[in-house]
Image (cartoon, rainbow, N blue to C red; front, side):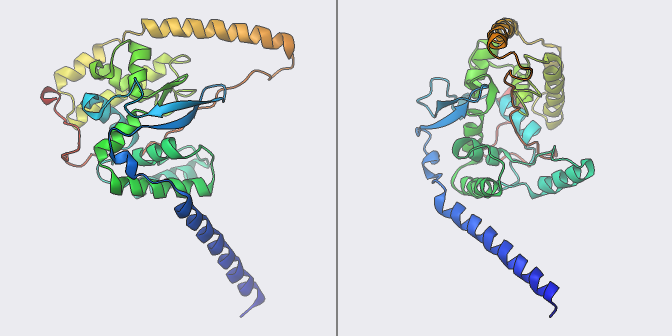
Length: 311
């Protein structure tokens, strides 16, 4: 046995030991997901505003903006499934096929641009983990996702996900999002409004921020509506009606104007204190993996109906 081969074996042994230690620590230190089975359960998590400050957010019925699964329109559920995790009803928390495609895409593009996190993984991260990019956090996320799939129904996972997603500046959950953008409860959202909110999920802070580029959000909204039609969630007539609808974003425009005024005032103050270039804070885009889009499995008992007329 050559010295080089011995060194290689030693290196592999060290790497395996480190990986085993990380996995072992993750198993021991992870919280239980069992309490999430109770729909009356509430917990408090910490979320960041767009200036990087932490704030408490109640997850559960004790939050006045909480929306129970039965009050969430089927079009809202299917919009996020088809846009974010088309295999949601097929995988068990981890979409291996989507991961392979994401790796292939990143290798071709020589970047880390494409994610492959499932809705379950995103829910686990939002509820229990930080956003740090590390092997330890990713392992913990995968373990929690598997546990959630074992303990919770798909409907419960989707309910949790839709109530913690970020949709604007300190706007978390579709209940808050529906009020913030359209001044109505989530149960009253139209298919166009559902697709509008779902369109923002990959990056409400930068990439799909309606404050910055509402046309980009509307374009992705139309793509999601096409997926809803293709999946059979919308009939042809309902699809045409949704595409023709212009969301009532008068409230959004007012918030945009107010945001611009606040930003100008902040810049005037900061420029007087710190005239150096590059001193203004920057926003960081929210992350959400987009899994492979494919035909979703046949409906399960827990799966939202695909016929709008039967909802």
